[in-house]
Length: 266
Image (cartoon, rainbow, N blue to C red):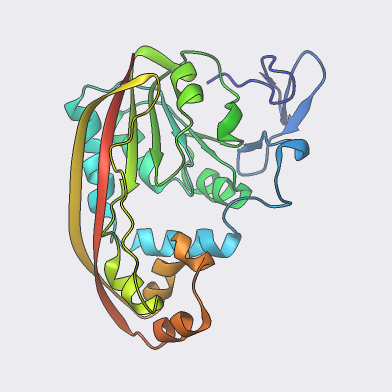
């Protein structure tokens, strides 16, 4: 799949060990096969996105199969709506969901994440896909070049998603529902505040084709309890008391609750 220079927007030409545009901007291809297309001037911090430890914790959790129903429902939904590739997964993380989806659809995949650690891990594990570190706010790909765009528990960049999708394409969005991981929340927070959450948001330039709710229970023990926390935004919010409560939790049965939305471009 063709990539664009994140600095000038020109087409990047793949060479032996790098990508280079006509204006001379060059980006090295890492040993694992991925490329970093996130210029320093586009970073908000030195190492944005998930850390290496967070990536490894998420990988260990996902390898346990606890969230396999989410991946399977994503594959089912894409099949039910006749989605075609290639796939662009924005906020791909370590590639668990999108690699499974691409295998199910037997199509090409470009995975994109702002975390270089996540992309490095994805590229090392899933060799049949293309992985880049880049910003979702300015996707380094051509207009109308994808049949399916996905974002799982990640931000929606409606204008950019619409730009890169074909007119017959689809956008699948996965959002956590309000009651997602209530068991974990009850352990780490002294009290919970009700906050209305819109799980079928209006996405400018798109119409909602289907919204599918998924809910299931799972049980984690030992290190997987901490791994569960590490792969959620709660890892940034937890206080000392909550952290201590979780360290004393040897086994946790919780409920995953999410909504999968399928949008079509208007």
